[in-house]
Image (cartoon, rainbow, N blue to C red; front, side, top):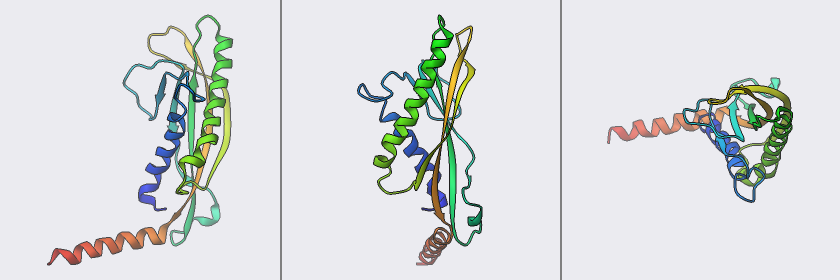
Length: 177
């Protein structure tokens, strides 16, 4: 795997784990809105899942040299909101249930969607029981539950850079013909 395409591919696979379960028979069949990026301009219907990608870091301190394989990790946080204005406690329970189903969706689908072995490991990190978010056109703040998973994968710096340099050299050699 190379650094140039890895982030995009891994994020795409994580999103596919969620969207593949947003079918009538899926674990997330009740989800009205999946927000796959940090910013969202359109209206949100709940129940909703909002994906936040956190900074990528080195997963193993011993693999920091640029001349070898790096073992990287990218945390993905899924904020889950189910709003019941008549029963906030019920909203909290439904939010926890939705967050658990998100984690189950990742566990169920990541192997199938990762057939080319881009992601070497998926780990459950944290379930944040209850926070809150403001939803447009709602007077109250809605309870929100987050679940964080971590995708771990290898980057081969040397081969990535060699191939890029070789491709650039090949293109430069052809310019004079």
